[in-house]
Image 1 (tube, rainbow, N blue to C red):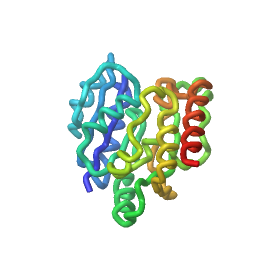
Image 2: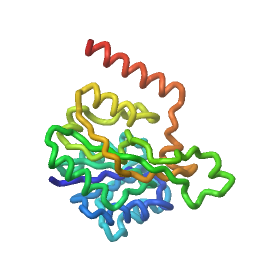
Image 3: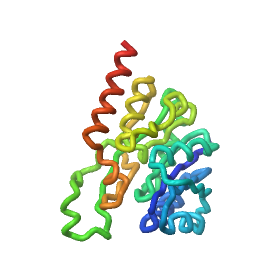
Image 4: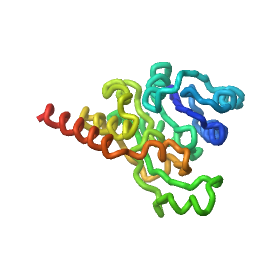
Length: 225
């Protein structure tokens, strides 16, 4: 099994080195790490290129997270895919535990896990109170918590590039509609950083985006009826 890690990054100079360090610390190393710089205007690409992990760095014009992920996936050569936002972190055993589960259970297409949210230390006490931090790790239907077989991802297809908000929710709904089998172990697989510039903050779904996702989900269910 070869694992490709795709990291979409946009103006992530403040957090990318720590994110890459969490990938480098994996007890089961990734076989390929791809950082896709989504037209950053800061030192994101330079930080990625200089990191000891030596990821492959791809630069592109700014077009949003789903298009950035899709480009990284198209360039990946691994049998399995993992994703990590450029401000989030992985526990050291993330890839090892998920890879072992996929090896042992051929009926599974992907493995997820729990997500632990934390407020970035750079956030002031006044700003920190604006973030709702769950008191305990939560089941993570998030790309950063996922390890998936490449063939299974291809069955579902690319992230919807016309959904700047909620594209991951849409993809997981399509995956369930396609019959993919996921397993959710009771293990933290992702530490999600909360701060004003995070992808989580930028991609809080607007009402129109949520309505569009709901419309697509209903249409899929009608087609399958």
